[in-house]
Image (cartoon, rainbow, N blue to C red; front, top):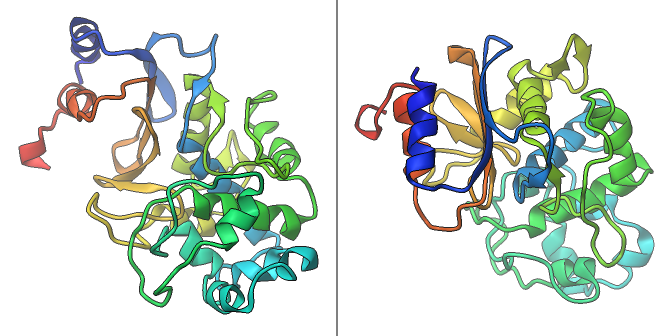
Length: 292
């Protein structure tokens, strides 16, 4: 591992990397930049937090993977859905949403009612499992969780996840109806995202406290839906012999239990390039793409 070289390449290439942490066997061995003082947008890494919320509710028996999304929506919402859409969404289980395996959703919800927009999407072939990335499945999971747990989802997360992980009042987004936006909109520090990674690294334990079951973490971090990136779990990406939390503009937490590593960096790099990731793999993991 050559962390100094990793940092040198970041600086030489003027990559907009806010901060980096590397943990080995639970010990913080390297850090660079602003890892604690400031929070930065994590974009779709928010989805992994929604997945953990699902796992906690699943552990409590309040929500089920094979139940339809409609099971967890209030009557006043169900009354407004056309019969044709009811027939469609009855076939969409929570597991299908968590794995992004429903084709046809637009990329994000829009308009004055995001829930009405999401439930009005014309989906022509819901029986077919195909990976189709969208923010709408995570948003719908968040709405379903709110009703399943009988509590505002942010308050539920604050009580059961953020407080035990010492993540104090994180920035987040709500939809126009007031639901926690489970797909994006959160801001965390590098260290705070590392804590989420360490929780998953320890299969649901954080500093000895059980937050979510190891059974759920095993399910969520395994391959539940194939895609061109190598596989997807429950809002968590497969990566090498481990898995990763991913955000839009190179927000990353790589969790590699077999190697004893958790690697987190927050960046804002809009260019479609894998250069930062490849630099990390060369200098920290000592691999090249040809050897993967």
